[in-house]
Length: 79
Figure (cartoon, one colour):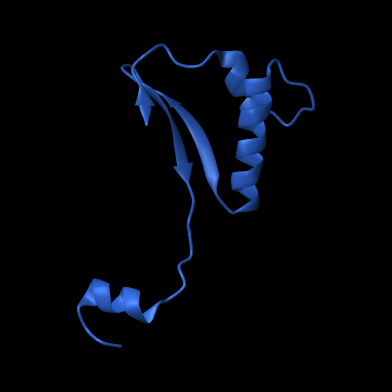
């Protein structure tokens, strides 16, 4: 999801990535907690500011349990 606007204020992004215990807003606290949760799940989140858009880039690897029915549906072969 991206937004074509100016992006988030610098202070809010600092709240997200900062390791401190004080935040400038509830949104900053929520972003910080979201980042920490992703880190606990071996994931990562970055805020990317480009010339025409801004967005959060989330990297998270999810492990799937191998399901016989799912594998058959994907491969078209019985396992």
